Image (cartoon, rainbow, N blue to C red; front, side):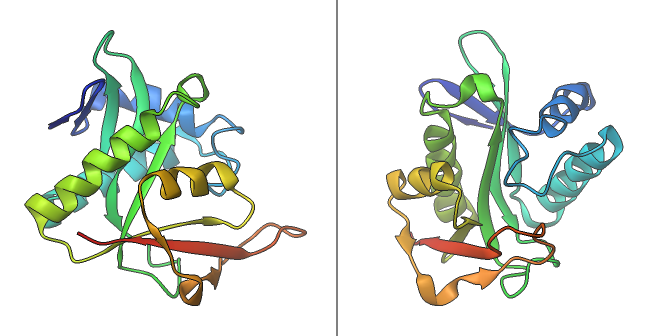
Length: 175
């Protein structure tokens, strides 16, 4: 578990699954994340996260607001999925928050804590962050975190919907 001034980042419980399924079914949240997921698909994501925690000691934490225990989403470092070439397997920071939490600084606060953990406790040498070239909100979080933009690492995201720019921009954090 990780605590910040306003947040608790913790491992997942079965009782968290409905809230995560709901966030994954929100088209606005999922706009840059490959589209909405079924409850079964959302549950598979949690299973993958928990398996990664068991195998590697890190993963995406559930993000909870301290003041009222509200579920806000997830944030943390995971090996990039094998479908995301050419960065598959590399540690990648990501976040997904309910829309009511947007614009409150929660993504930056949670990601900063997750990165600190990845470097200090886990000992990672670098952590990537990537998003669509058009996703300026996520890029702003990456910039607030102090990540370095590395255009030479940009890549075309597989399975980009027709008519959208497939370019994913890459930022990197170092300890």
